[in-house]
Structures are given as C-alpha cells and as structure tokens.
Figure 1 (cartoon, rainbow, N blue to C red):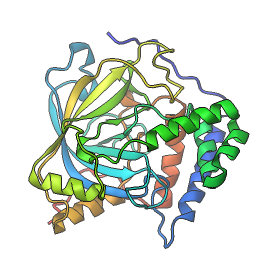
Figure 2 (figure 1 turned 90 degrees about the vertical axis):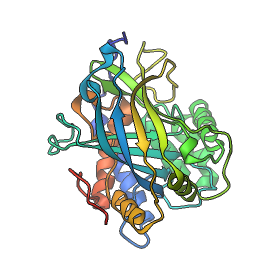
Figure 3 (figure 1 turned 90 degrees about the horizontal axis):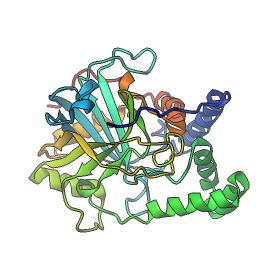
Length: 333
C-alpha cells in the first residue's frame, strides 16, 4: 500500500511570484511570434499530432482502482509529440522532447475554475525521469540565463549560486546529451508528481518498441512512417510516493525510485499522419491546449513546479488563443 503522508509546502508569496514568472514566458512567446500569432511559450515545435486510445486495465491492484482507473474503460485520445524549445528548430539540435496526451470523455470534477464540467484529462511528460531544477525559481533562472547562451553559466551562477548552477547545468546537459531516438521507442516521464486519490505518484508512458537504434532524420516523419505500417503502444504506469527523502514532492530534481505499476494502455492505432486526413488531425491538435491542470480533482498536480505551471500554461494558452477543450472529435473527412 503506497504511503499517504505526503504534503505540499506552499509559501505566502508563491502566487505573486508565479504571476511574475508567467509574464516572463508571455514575453518570450511574443518575442518568437514572427510573424504572429504566437506559438506555445515552450514546446513550440510539434513533431507530430495523432489519434490514440487509452484503455484502463482490468488487473490493477485493488487498492489502486481509483477515480478514472476504478474500472476497465476505453477513451479516445489525442497525442502531441514536441520539442521543448521556445522556437521551432531542427530536431537534430539537443532538446527536451515532450509527449502530451489529451484523453476525452473522462467524467469527474475538473480543477480549473470555469472548466469544472470539462471532460478532458491531460497527461504531460518528457523523456527524462527528473528535471535539472529543484523548483520554479531555479527553472526561471535557467530560462532567463538561456536567453543569452554565451553568458548562461555566468548569469546562472549570479542568480542561484555556484553549487546549484553547476548542478542545474549538469542535469540539463545530461538531458540534452540523450541520443536522437525514434519517438515510438522513447519512454516518457511526468518527472513531477500528481495526486492519485489519497496517494501521490509520478506517471510513466513506457514504450513497447525497443530502443535499439538512433535516428538521423526528422522525428515526426519517422514516426509517421512507423504508424503507417502498424500501431504504437505505451503502458501508462504509476510509481508512488514512499517518503519525503526518496520521493520528495517539492524537489523536482530527484528521480523517484520504485516499481512501475501499469494502470492503462495507450495505443496509437495504424494511421497515415501524412495523408490529407492526417494533416487535418495534426492541425486540429495544434490548436488545442495541453495543460497538466486539465485534470480531475483526484489527479491534481503537486509540487512547486506544477503549481507554477498552473499560472504559466494558462497565460500561454490565452496569448495564442488556443481552442477550447473538446467534448468530441470531428470526423476529419
């Protein structure tokens, strides 16, 4: 049975600071909006947008049959693969790779005010199991320093001190040095916690395709060819909070250990993303907002970085006038 004694630590000035952080991202978003309208503040370039299905498994341990994972069910879903940078650039450049899933038809009260009756549940993941930064303050220091790449180390040291700056740079470089790998064979991690009923967990989309080769081409084109020949599968797994040291809620730089417990299967069915219909699907997905706070109240994002994202993602969504949450999908004919 997972532990339930986890807790968040929220400072009195947090809301004000997070609003300031969001304004920085809005400025970056506007900077790269040439020509307008602006793209996403981060993860601007989509590798591919495709249709999917999420199937809740029947053999989940009894104590973990909670919320949307309480009973076997199938949901339609949309998946967006992306690069992490604020600008659209070649896939050959080192980058954080993103994996965003929007599940449709999910019942339950949602978190965002005014969207409590929405029927979408989003899961956002990257290909590293932890982040290089401990919290939102360090992340913002890194973002600001990265605006002048040649001066990044100096500016980061001035902002957060030598020891932490070296740790952040080391962690960032480790992520960037990961080989350019096929998207279908890449496992993706939330790297940040969410609630899972009374528990706290991180989730992992574990790839079924073996990661045996690297790629030298554009990632989206390679995945499109893969999907044209057959489905791509991932296991949606959870790993759970055990204690404040091994699995901290507020320190995003610590990789959580623990067993992966499968709770669902994500299937990208055979499809042709390069066909006229596939292009329409990708364009539709690109208009949507993927936000970790598009979530049921019992799957609430946890921790400092997640709380900062609650403000920043909303600002980015509003700036680019993203489409509202879908209740059903068009035919794309």
